[in-house]
Structures are given as C-alpha cells and as structure tokens.
Image (cartoon, rainbow, N blue to C red):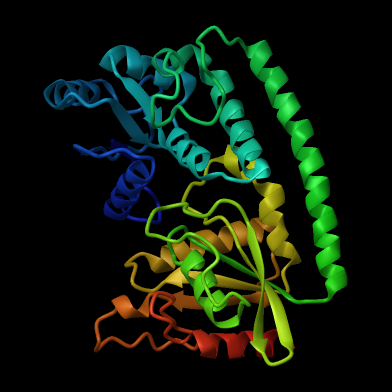
Length: 350
C-alpha cells in the first residue's frame, strides 16, 4: 500500500484509514510503504527508486495486489502493473469495491455500477490483470466487466442504459419524497464521516421511539457499512413523531465518480428539517473529519442553520476527560444521552 501525504489528515491517520478500507473490502494488509512527494511522478506516481524498493518488497512478501492511497492515472496504472508484474489498484478502485459489496437497493447498485464503469472506461488499457479476472476480489466487483474483450463502445452503451434506469428510480424516489412532505412529519437526517456511529445512533433512536422497540439497520465498525438510505418513523414525545434517515458516510477525498453517482441520494439531506452531524469524539482527527463533512454539506448547498452537531462515542474517552461542548455528547452504543438528544431534536423541530 502506497500512501501519499494528505494536507489535513496526517500520514499516520491516513495510513490507518487505508488499512481499514482494505479490511472492509475483505483484504489483509501485510506491509505498508510510504513516500512524501511534492507531486506524483507522471509515469509511476512514486518514481523509479521507490518503484524498485516496492518491487523487492513485493518479491519478498508475495502479495496478491498492491493498493495506492491516491488516484492513479491510466498511464501510471499501466506502468506500475508492467513494472511490478502484479495487480495494482488505487484508492478509488478500493472504495468502489466496498460500495459494490455493500449496496443493497436497486438504486444503490446502479449508482455503484455507473461510478465504476465511468472510472474504469479510460483505464481499460492499464487494467489487463484486473479485467482478466472474474470477480477476483478487491477492486474487481460491481462494474459488470467479465472479459478483457469488452470494448469502450459496449461500456458506453451500458453507462447510457444505467443512467436511464437511474432516472426512473429517481422519479419514484421523488414521488415518495412528496408523499412524506404531504404527511407533514419533520425529517431528520443523520450525516457524518464514515464509522462515526450514524447507524448505531439510528438504532439507538429506534430502540426508544420506533414501534418495534429495536434497531433497524446493521451497524458495526466497518467503513461504509451503510450505503442505502433507510427512513423510519419514531416518537420523540407523546403525540410528536418524526422521520429519521440514515445516510452514506463521507470520507476524505471521496472519489468524484461516486460523488456524482450518489449526488441525487445525497441531495435528499437538503430536504431534511434538521441534519444531525455525528462526529466521533474519540477520534484524534475528529476536527479534520468534521471539516471534511462540512465541506461536502456546503457543496451540496445544505443550510448550516439546520445542522446540529452530535459528539458520539463518549464512552471511549477516559473517565477524567470531559468534552466540555455545548453540542450534545452521547454514546449510541450504550444509550448515554439519547433521551436528552431526543428532547433537543423535539425543541429544534417544534
């Protein structure tokens, strides 16, 4: 795995995030090689000397593939695979693979397929080892490529078809949105950096206010556990009900193809009466990750006045530590502060 230094999140945090992404895609990291450069080498991203070092490391450890923690150009991808004689993928391919594994709804699956095909189209000449494998694991799922012989014309036709299908799905979602507005219930959307605990909070709220009295979505410590938006009705006070929605998490340098493909889904947060921006207070880089989410919300055009920041995972802080924030501080895992948060939500949407 190659790691290029980021401007905001430091290199150690970026390395850890990359390892978590690899594990979320079903991989196991056996070694990490880092390099700081002012700019990437146009031919191989890392330069001739580092390429030799990487080649020797790969010969020693015999990995199945090498992941670059940056986006590679078609030329870089081709040169690296030729120079290393190994399958190479970049950060974008890795995230696309995770999304392909996690998408469950028809719209989510189509969105991932679209993003994957559009990303791979200009890289076909540099993906011989990848495209020659059928569903071989990390970086190969979700786009529908099964043969190297698939040419650009076939892929462009598939992209056009997926876009037409997405338009139909989006029209259906717009009808559902109008029905919700006619229902008159306030909509609360959970947003935040991936793995901040949005799904855990969603379940905690449902355990108190949903008719089932139980969690409604799968939640664990894997990155991008939630892709498909889930909406549930809960009671926050006697006679006062709201709708809550769980959404896909954000991440540093989210691939542009995914942002574009999921834009219509992300724009649903703009319909919310209140956005709960969930942040992991136990994360040393939580301030940088808050900034990442805020930037995405600004790009989408979200109203900052309708954002309520919620600090999660206070159970992971040392007993003597006190967050000292005016914003709600909770532990979704243990239910700490959830009822107080419901009261705050009730006041916000009255």
